[in-house]
Image (cartoon, rainbow, N blue to C red):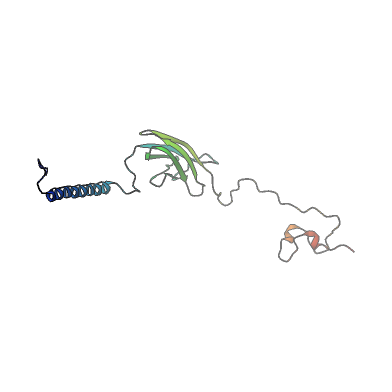
Length: 184
């Protein structure tokens, strides 16, 4: 309460000023508490603008689609590739984003895209390299079996074989020269 003229007692004036200061401090504390309780926790995504990311997941060796590949931007935005390898990620925050693709039996791949508000960013083709091929399926023809070159100074004794198969057996020497004895 403001008075038209200061009270005659200086103690009364001081009491009024102190009460106003206390009221102002309490009001500021209440407003601060209300303001901080309205802010979201630090790990929650706030209000932002979003876009969409599309693309296709292919096998890098055959160019065939990889169905059911897991496509993600961070840990909050994920999608699964369909039978044609196509995917659509919606609600992706705008700006530079990294699209990662994982599929069992393949190495993962990542690609940067720039997402615009209410637009679709095309990641195009994301090609995964097989981590290991199925058993029995070789990538190249197997190399020929090397045969040892004959040594002119060593000749095998009767009953001792200098073939690679014999030298690979347990107890046999690894070198055809060490298993051969000189002729008398």
